Every structure is written in structure tokens, then in C-alpha cells.
Amino acid sequence: MDHPTILTLGGLGACGVLLVAANWSSIASRLPRMPQFAWRNRDTNDPTPLIDAYHVARDACDNNADLAERTDQVFKDLICRKVLRCEK
Image 1: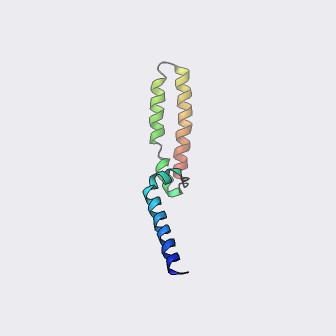
Image 2: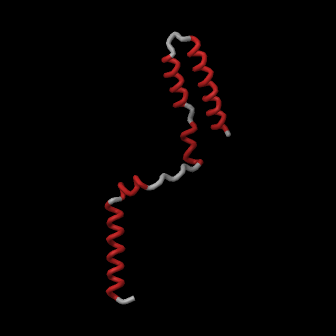
Image 3: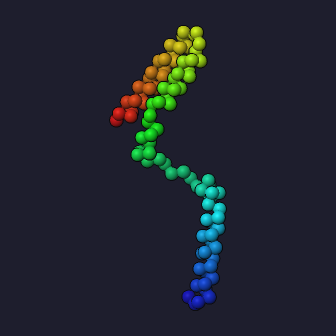
């Protein structure tokens, strides 16, 4: 390669890098998301949000005993599964 070709290719490369840097937020939003690794999932195994959802659902039952009983059973099963999965 001769000297002008190297300068041209270097300039084009630098412009490409500058374009990517200037538009990185737009580019990053279009990139596919990487899967979360197991060590990142530890925080999502916390059953606290599920327990909070149970309290909201239980409050919404008001005086309907049948709905309250079914809500208790569903959330009991979900919370037990979540806690048991956390212990593994």
C-alpha cells in the first residue's frame, strides 16, 4: 500500500469510529440484549415483591371469602416455589 491509501483508510476508519461514538445511544438501543448470567439472577430470586403482590391481591378481595381462599392458595404455592428455588 502506498502512503495516500493508508491515510485515506485511516481517515475513513477514524470517521467511522467518531460516527459510532456520536450515535452510540441510538445504536445501543437497537442491539440485542445479552442474556443475564446466573450471578445476576440472584437479585431477582428475592420473594419480597411476590409477597407484596400477595398483600395487594388480598386487600382487593374485600369480603369475598372464596376469592380470598383461592388467592391465599395461589400465592402460597408461588411463594413456596420462589423460596425453594432460591435455596437451591
